[in-house]
Length: 84
Image (cartoon, rainbow, N blue to C red):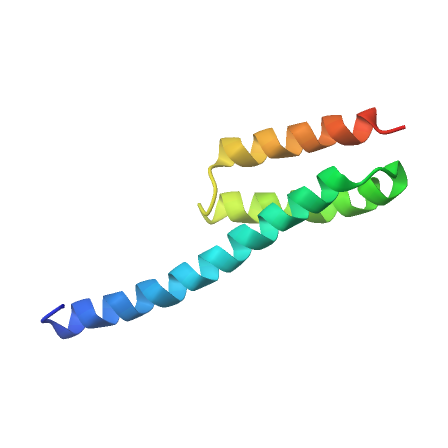
């Protein structure tokens, strides 16, 4: 266990931040999964901007890599375009 006040505080902060990051990462994965499960093009087009915004925010805060966000947005856009 840590011996210094600063390291104890850092451990406390890390736990809180980890929980915060896990929530947003899981929310993002669920949103992508929900969008990929859609079969109606109009509904998918309505949901896509919010998913895109979420991916951009997570990439900006380094929760996910910027290229991963770009790849996900691109693949989702292709998926939506293929819907009939």
